[in-house]
Image (cartoon, rainbow, N blue to C red; front, side, top):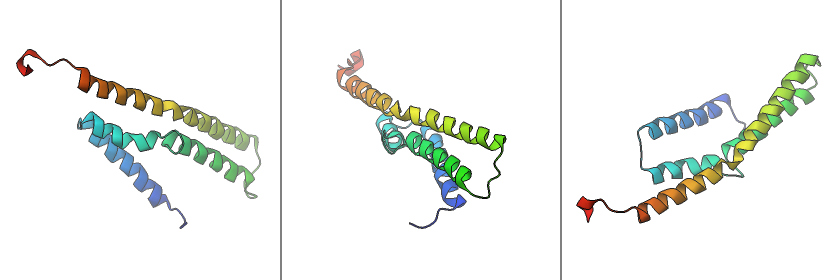
Amino acid sequence: MPALTPNDIHTAAETLSRLTEYLHAEPDPGEALALIEPLLDEYTGIPVQLGDALRALARAVLDHPDTPRTPGLHRLVAELRDAAWEQTDQHTLHYALDDLRALLTGASSNTPECSACR
């Protein structure tokens, strides 16, 4: 695997920004759900990946021999690890997407027609 660069990560963040702009344009809900689904996958979605990345950063900083061993370092590493757990806890958002999809599917097939449509 080629080494990542800050530009690679910036590109990913820019893609998320473009997604947000697109969603502000009020696309079809089904299409919007399809775009969000990969981000909230319970195993590979952003909450899980970001949590893993924060834990890996904490480990990399703590394990590096040139890192100064100070109380401040341990406090910052603890903050990273706490944030990692908070992010990972969001993995259940995929259930909200499932419920939203069911609601939208049910609404489109069970919604009574207006009088003009009958």
